[in-house]
Length: 154
Length: 154
DNA sequence: TTATAAATGATAATAATTCTCAACAACAAT
DNA sequence: ATTGTTGTTGAGAATTATTATCATTTATAA
Image (cartoon, rainbow over all chains, first blue to last red; front, side, top):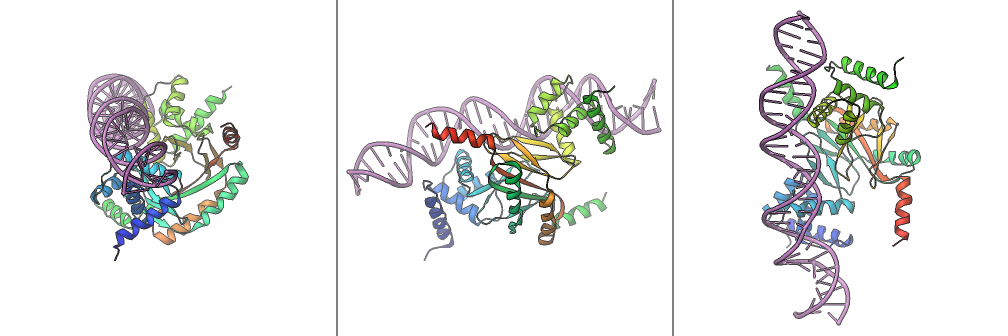
């Protein structure tokens, strides 16, 4: 019987094939990680994850692979501002991100109404629209508590 | 009679004062540039602009100043993907950006309906929302023509 | 004025990203 | 299955972007 990990790798492998992307172990692992993780991982996190799972990989390959996936619209890049690191997310079902400006935690909101603005953008600019991204910045519930406690202790 | 440039600097100076930001020549010039330019300039463009206009400035000051303005919500950072450089924009009236993935041109769309999604985000996540940003990626009319011609000439 | 707290700027230090190219691997055609 | 071709990987170098340092200068309030 196949393990969960094997199943996920298989799904990723099929995704690569249907996108005519050559099927290497590194690409399978990176894509399956992005498909299943809710952490919206950074380059560094992805690099460590692949090695931790027993595959060889270099940083150059992580960069190349993520760029390739972005070009194929399989994933998106998220600029999570404070900290300055790019984060990556599998993007099959349209959703947007709510990002904590204190701890950088990112949560998904699966509501595609923001996508309606693409039509307005086309009408107003004449651009040929490929995709769009909506991001909300704020303070997560945990950090709201932390910051409140901090203020009291001055 | 005051020149246009002088007027713009005056407006910027008042903006700084009303935000309790110490009023230095560098800050005036950078803010006035962001308030009047439609170019959504990068760090490099801002640095060159300030020097071209006869003021001394260092890269460190440009970085510091932009961070300060972002913290005061006077401007926003835009991750214009391809090219990887951050771009900056004065942000008084809510609007979103339509970005050409080929030439990186950024145009504004002044339609704040995307802001309505903030309420949904609050309800679904419990975050204390500070602001939100919507970005559309596509190909601008000029590049549509260029790319079409290119394809024909292979 | 003058005191003082803060900003500037030259440069160093660090971190992130891209480049290079030899060795290797995927996959289509046989 | 074997092989040839084309594309991928990876170690490290090169480059680029960003942040830190700190002596000097400047803005502002008293």
